[in-house]
Length: 207
Image 1 (cartoon, rainbow, N blue to C red):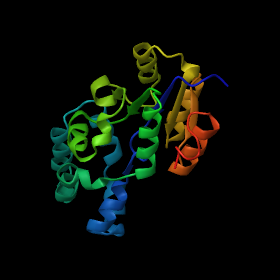
Image 2: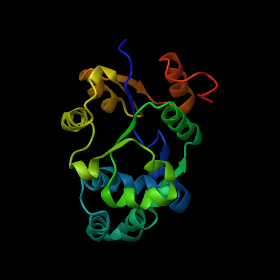
Image 3: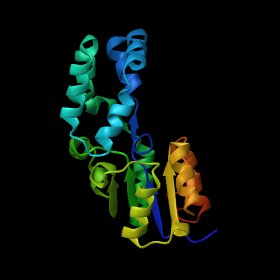
């Protein structure tokens, strides 16, 4: 296996929990939440935000288009930070441990322009990456091959020297197809073990 020259983190469900269904279950109850998500493709609407569309305009337009759910859909904008919570502390420690050893650490994330601006002051570690590849600014989202190409072209690291973790298998498969080293994130301990196995951190550093 090639030597790792840079580590690439997804953010949602890797560094910050992203569970909109859980949020709505707590606010309107599982039955009503299930009905709303069946009626409206909220994740698809959010993809438009992640491609760079204006957050408030996009969500409020969806709310107006679905008057039976207007108040609930508006919560996707008005209470968004409650959906993007909490931080996954062990993953944050791994990010910082890698940087402390001088290894370049990048973010590659499906994230809107305005939503990232909301998240940054709440989660200071979002400012600690060596390079940030944010889909809203790039105009394309994972797993489109173009976004991986853009990372490769910008960072100058060979694909087989990048180690990428993401919680979605489609995103992982696209990276692997390009020659990236990959880890399907299913919890911070598994990611810590992978970083130790790759010789990037010791067990103590990966705690």
